[in-house]
Image (cartoon, rainbow, N blue to C red):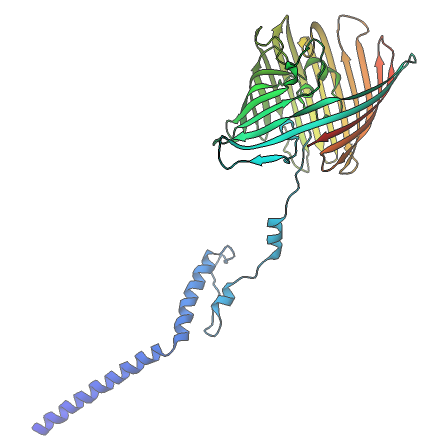
Length: 420
């Protein structure tokens, strides 16, 4: 009986020992294959990396990594030198001469880390003009003009809205009926964004009465302003103006003082001016850029006056077409009159090369419809040559002027336009 129990206990002990060895061998087998453990862990990390990568396949099929491969080398993607070159490539400044606030280069700029101002820059431009004119009665004139310039500073305040300030003056300006120094302070204002598309401007600024009159003195399509633009507008007044631009419409509208160039400021009733342009087609390379709209200006200063106009502009590849008609029932520009008048111009520009433009223009003005012999028509043909990324422009044009009463004339117009 004792031997039977002893054999029984021995069998139990052997069984337990065998089970212990079996479990120990299984445990040892698991520990002795670290490559497999690393592979599974790496596989899981790789799956997460590929899942987060934008190059992961849409069916979530991940890369399978074998134990003998090095996951770190497979996960590392080759660098793309082209992307780095594009990221660090300096883009040249492009000066758009037709845009009033962006005609200047960003040189001569100073940025501040603290203080009221975020940045300030010197701005300026100068036109040097020489004209040879010969009238049909034999009288000739040589006229040079280097007094058309605009100099000053622009910058931004340190605020969330990124408010802009502008202070520019014309060093030399001789305007009949505006003697003294005050008119030389040409534009000084503060401009604050309202939202992504709109701004509001307070101060002395150009009034939006006709497109031609609202343009900057720099970058005029043919180097000279159309006749009615110089007659009805091309002035600055103190006021408040709102402006906005969207894909299909843009506008400028405001209330201004009728005093010009700080002459007789705030002595009479205010005037109103607005300029609206619609964009019927989408601005694309295929269809071009089309603008059509109108303008209106009304006020009272010695006389009641109102000037209305319609305009059309179209840019298509190398062609640029610009036309505007204006009618004045009295006007208050650089001179004031209660006469009825009208004028229109049609301008065509063609880009021969990126630096050379050819242009022609028909420009007519009837200064007083109540009198005979007041019509003056100018026919212009010429070329622009741009230098230094459009920071300089050389203009050469021929102008034939036909007058109803005064002698006709032939004129050779040359101009060198320089911008900072």
